[in-house]
Image (tube, rainbow, N blue to C red; front, top):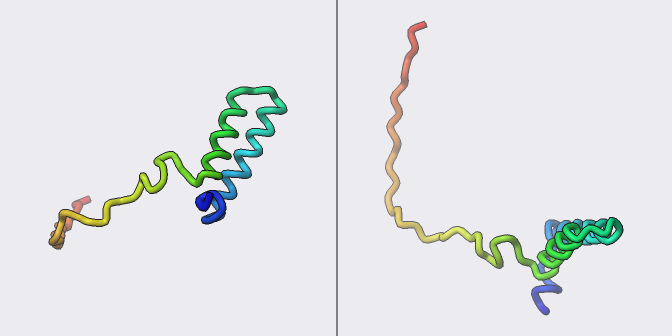
Length: 80
């Protein structure tokens, strides 16, 4: 219940508004696909999950590279 009530930001509100809009349009047009997409998008906003799940797209902060090296560039001159 805490996840539903806290953490509302602009993108989450936008997903909810779009989900409700698509759901209403689907009900009005009697289109099953639009109704499903409206429920899915609205449900994602209410549950605060995305396509990857909660924190599924996080980048691993521990890196195996410990030393960085300077890159040497060579200038190429064109004789036109």
